[in-house]
Length: 422
Image (cartoon, rainbow, N blue to C red; front, side, top):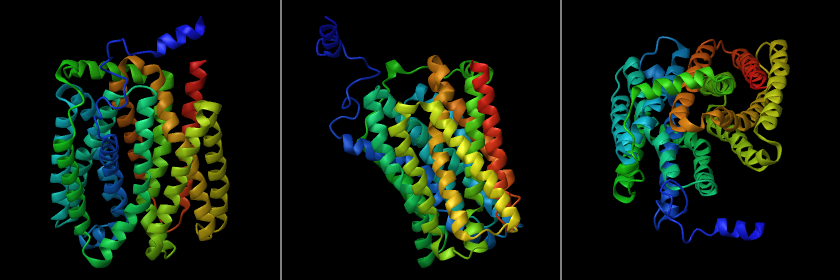
């Protein structure tokens, strides 16, 4: 009898189709591979806009007259600042005006920011352009995931997103090499010309080939009061707040690395010619972690896997900080590489799980909560990681001390959340 009921439950041929979930092909249409590639491209624009720049930030800062060597890091953090603000706005706005229009507006703003960067004549101007670029890039990043959610439910959505992430993970491995190649044959300004071309390609592809996934009858008006109420629920819930803080602190360690990696590898260790290879190596560690997480999370659970990863991250950071202090902030390159590879592997296990745990109690307001949690964790990362990155003094001590301190803050915030949950 139970088997019969199960088979009846699985037979959907006689049921009306739920407009918010279901068939893998419904909103993708007859071109699932094209849809996956489009969503992957829209997501990858953020990684391209960050990682392609890394080999060039020293040259840009010098040519545009940055006052301090550490000021080059603002080329990265300004982009993240715009991304953080846009994350809070575009998700809820797309629920009101539709996915294609929201992404289209974001891509136009991204193009404006790219043009400002392309024609910058001083350092302040490029920082303004990077902020605008980040604000625009947040639309394709956030809203493209909503496009998948519009037409897919459960396993179907997970399947599409797994294919998207497979394509997406290639970008951090390849983007610095593209930036290095551009610098070998042309000015750094051509990097922004390339980003402008990618944005235009994505916009045309979206507009001409992809149907709107959120029809008018399913749209909801944008209400500021609703957004404020959702923010209050996130801030008051210990699990949502504790793991949002944890996600922000652990992401802050990655911001430190992004900001200082060019200085550390190209200048401190003289690895400028091989910078793109080192970056791809460490990005590979995070990619492997995502694949391992997908295999183990159902067996061990998000919390157990996160605890193991966080404790490993923290213990390794403390031990390596002691080694760095003993060696005057200049450990052997192979030791630094091993440390970063393992800590990035741990971070790769933490990023997705922390966000998923923070979202667990927010079921009724999932869309709004995702925007708030994403923006708040990014803001925490920028403030902590950006500040620590500015302490770079020609040694790796600020980097490793930052990993240690932010790891401790992550531990305390998540432990507080778990104690309050019980």
